[in-house]
Length: 356
Image (cartoon, rainbow, N blue to C red):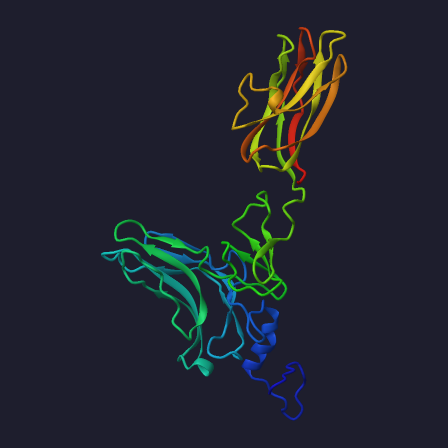
């Protein structure tokens, strides 16, 4: 049958449908890799999770889909494992080697493999001074689960990132643990970089345009709240008009991006007619040393009214470089000497990314 509607009632036993027709029809539920084929792989980031203890590899429960490799019209096979499966690695060799564990889907009616099942297969690698992982034998339907690096001396380790492929429902977002996943995507495919923090831009969501991956949210867009610090201890500057650091936070900035630093709380000055001043500063590095505040790294200095006052100060700045920066709130009298104090309570300092 060239055109196959598979959800019609039979009349006098016709039409009848084979398993292959059902597989082809339902393969439309998964991410495509061709007109009649799907992308093989695990269906979630936690499916078939691999770990190792000593020389025993454990493969957790999970779900996936396997594209038949015998013919282009074989269709797709949903597969699952409902319990953890273990595999003991072969003893170490005289040289290092890399072993492979893969999922093998057998369908004897199609591939004449002698079985109808899905199994995890252990394939030891060849010892070498520069070992490489073996590959799934040609013609076998399945996908790699993990590799195991077995040194001549020492403890084996397993690698799954970049080894096991992932897939999704049609129109879905494919998880990826490396920049190379998924391989050979179709135009318009979206991936989720599970190895990338939500706070690391351009963010984990990307779309493929036949030649490169592009961030779904352009890097020039604001990223929102980046860092926050609340301090409840009281502080007092009883010396002079020299700024004293009260609150700091340390974060990672990107060169050339624009940020907004905010501070809020309460402040009191004891000298009538001399207004308290609040300053916002930045400096490269993981701390704000005493005396580091100055004209070269000031964001803003704001005067507040006499007496006890709530305050909120904020201003924008462009990071002059990338890497670790410390941001600080300082306080002092605008001139002269006396006491200016920040009482204990909810005094906060926070940083927003506002784009480029």
